[in-house]
Amino acid sequence: MTRLIDLYRRIPAEWRQLAILAALIFLVFPLGLSLFRLNLVGKYLSFAFVALGLVLCWGYGGILSLGQGVFFGMGGYCMAMFLKLEASDPVSTAIQSTPGIPDFMDWNQLTALPWFWEPYHSLAFTLLAILVAPTLLAYLLSLAMFKRRVGGVYFAIITQAVALILSTLIVGQQGYTGGINGITDLKTLMGWDIRTDSAKYVLYFVNAVLLMLCLLASRFILGSKLGLLLVAMRDKEERVRFSGYSVADLKVFIFCVAAMFSAIGGAMFTLQVGFMSPSFVGIVPSIEMVIFAAVGGRLSLVGAVYGCLLVNYGKTYFSEAFPDLWLILMGSLFIGVVMFFPNGLAGLFASGPIKPFVDFWRWLTTLRHHLPADRSHPINQKG
Image 1 (cartoon, one colour):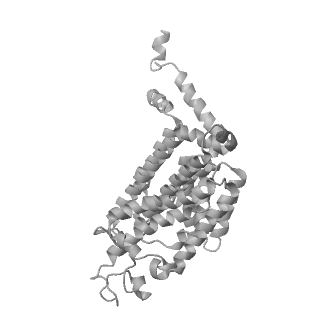
Image 2 (cartoon, rainbow, N blue to C red; image 1 turned 135 degrees about the horizontal axis):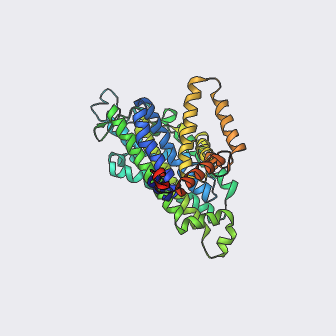
Image 3 (tube, one colour; image 1 turned 90 degrees about the vertical axis):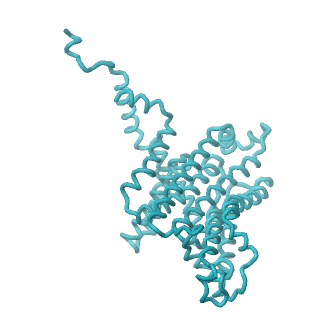
């Protein structure tokens, strides 16, 4: 037992936290929850991709983005377009006036598939689009802003405006995007029915593995020289600039990484939930995504995942138990965390009221470490 405790203490704290989170996601949830609840957790974890990106660009880079729903939605819509085309084969849509096109296009009297939908017949193109399209938009947006030294609250407002523009565009172009209802009735992925129980289990684990890979990539970035530069840029931007580094390039890079993570989450959300709509693109969902990171702790990668799980679970629980009060309760939760725990839940373990208990546990493990190794025959030793 002592050796196990020693081995545990030698593992860096970040890896211990990651191991506990992995055990929770890969063992506890699948074994302890029903399929319905597990599917909900999978949905919550798809938002964790966005929260990870926010930890990188907001917590460490000092770039607050209130438009991450744009990239989440772009990833989700790319995947939804591929799935919708697969569900709209001429046989399944034979009753339409124009078979072979998505149903909402037929309802809006389109007679041919728009040209920008055509490439989404290919899964390879779709996967590439999920990664490249949101990253390219993030690159162009951030390049235009950061090269002109536009940052802080101005950048946050601009990202909000982009979220509003995109959601309005999606709603207004109903014939091409499905409008306010979004793209629904998604059934198969390359002939594999994603609505079955076994498919939901598989998609949950695929989502979890991708999230862990993003966590490791984030950990790698923060552990490298780039991570140090991000922190320096957040605290003393002018000093970093005067040291010869391009602050704009650093900001562009980390903002693009955050956008790519968000798009992966959006694609996994579409696969697990079976639809994508503008309700996940606009200002309100983008602010909710910031709340996930704020509640979990904007300086903690693992904390951001816990924040997603907690806030979304609270959303589900309050809306089921208190349908008339759940918005007030969720707002109270956010206000309480911001007022009393500015570093989020992760900050409780560093400097909050839980710290004495953590210190006590560390003192206990240290005490056990210094006890004599052979304590099994104390009477014989005296004799």
